[in-house]
Length: 379
Image 1 (spheres, rainbow, N blue to C red):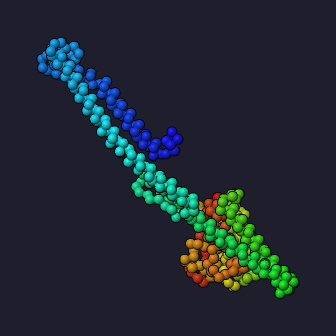
Image 2 (cartoon, rainbow, N blue to C red):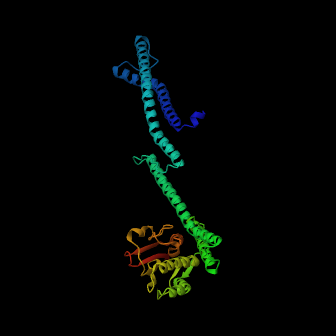
């Protein structure tokens, strides 16, 4: 019984045999019950046709003719039973073979997927199963392959994330360690400038850790959003007022193109400001001195379209698809001092999507500037 319960193939095979046995039993009982009555009916009809009178009913015949009819019926019944037995045996053998083949056709792909799932659990994420046809098992195999592909992507992202985090943490830690060793060895002077360098690296390390924590929260959708109608003009005025000094310090012109009519969006005001701050900060970072950054608000159907356009270094076409990936950097040679943590755009993407919008980047290539666009639903 334990073997029966733990093997699907045995269950399927047994169910086929049980159905066949029940069918055979029904056929056998039906023929035993109905054959005498049917034979008597047809025999009576034949007697009437031959002019043998009404007294020759089945079981009521007299004399030689009645005995002959009874012997004929017994012979017919024996031959019928013999043929039925051979038919049942032949049908059972064929049914056993067909049941075995059918059960194996069902069990084989299930076993293949079971073995593949075990290999995936062992870390072999490239494992796939063959999918043929459009039946339920083929659909299950296709879903299994899709799951395996997603697991492989997640594992690749996990490994890349670990490598990126290790690299990002190593840079400020190396600077802090080098400065500390320089102070201990007397190579670096113990003055305010040295301590300021150590403080800056520690602050950069702290910002990176905070960004990683924020990224983890937004990717796992563990953030609480206070969605309510927000005036887009107020959003732009607030963020540009906060950052105007930084633009003036770098001598970059910050323009605003605001709508004439009020536009209200359904958004979390703090998170929307965070996205705009990240995009403006990114534009400020990659726009050279005397450049221009323009913030534009437009209404498109049921969405408000925010655009942050700069006259900076631009983005090559092959990098546009990855610009929102975590730690992705177009210029690999830039240090984090000049290139940021590489997480701000990723956080912005998740925040915009969490509020029902989408975000993308456009650029005409290197040294032709770029524009970052995101949308939020109209209230």
